[in-house]
Every structure is written in structure tokens, then in C-alpha cells.
Length: 196
Image 1: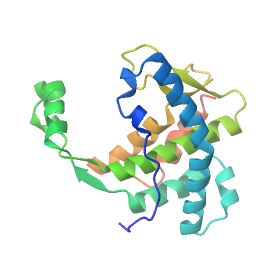
Image 2: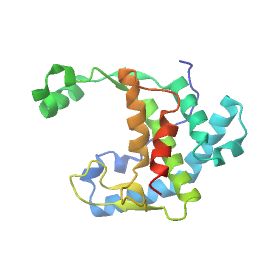
Image 3: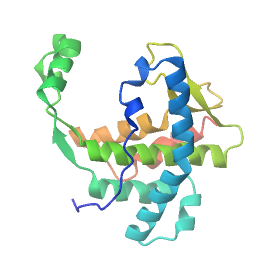
Image 4: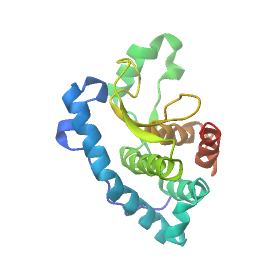
């Protein structure tokens, strides 16, 4: 993998806790921050990817086909890191009954996760720009939902909701068990496109 020169956007300190622990006021502030930073992050991601992959910036308007180039670019740079003892202890507490094989020794690196946040923002922005029936919404319940208090794209015919950062991260996690392939992001988007 080649080293990537990419300036990531750190979360502001007030959003450092897990979103499910946000108060309603914090969730609203996070949503506003996310929507405010989204155009800048999408522009930076597409400009960086277009320059490195030697494709015109306009090619990122060809959604979902642009996801092929975007994912190829991400896979060139995605890195892994060891999980910490604290993370392994949390996994044991939560999933230990399934056996030690369930405890992940590696994960997608923190840096790669920040790049995935930008990819997720791009995906959400693309859905909303290309499909008028779709829009952004802050999902606040149920409280035990894994992606509660995060911006989602809603309006799919199936009533399913799309949390774009999570969806990009799910595709990236396939790197851990060699199930990743260059068009996995594109294929996932095509699947969801059928639900618009």
C-alpha cells in the first residue's frame, strides 16, 4: 500500500463521546456540524481522488459508477492496525461467549476510518443530489439502534435508512477476512439504488 497524503478532519472535542450517549442538544449540534462540514469534505475527497487516479473531477457526478474509482483509490491506501487490549476486553465482555475467534486482533486503522467518514459523506451527498425522493435526517430512535444520533439518508421505498459512514465502513471491514474486492462499494450502492 502506498502512503497517502490526505488531511483528515478530526471530530471537534464536544463530539468525542459515542453518539448513542449524546443528549438531544448534542445530537442536533453534531448533525449541524456534519451538514456544515460535508461540502468541504466531499470537495476535498473528490479533488484528491481525481488527481491521484488521473480522472476528471466531473466523473464523480456519474453516481454510482464513480464508486469504482473511489473504492480502488481507498483500497490502495487502506491500512490496518492492531486492536488495543481495551478494545479486546470490550469484545470479550460483549461477545466472549462466542469464543476467542470472535475477538478481532486487527481493525481498519483510525486514519482509514477518518477517510471512510469522508467517503460516507460523499455517498450521502450523492444520494441526495441524484435522487429527489431522498433526503438527510437525524435518526434519534430507537435509542438502542447502532447508528442512533447520526445523519442518515432516508426516503428509500423499502423504508430502510442508509447511514453512509457505517455502510462504507462495513465494506472496508471485509479487508480483514479477504472478502474485499474492487467493486464492493459500487455493488452495495447498486443494491440500494433498486430501493429508491
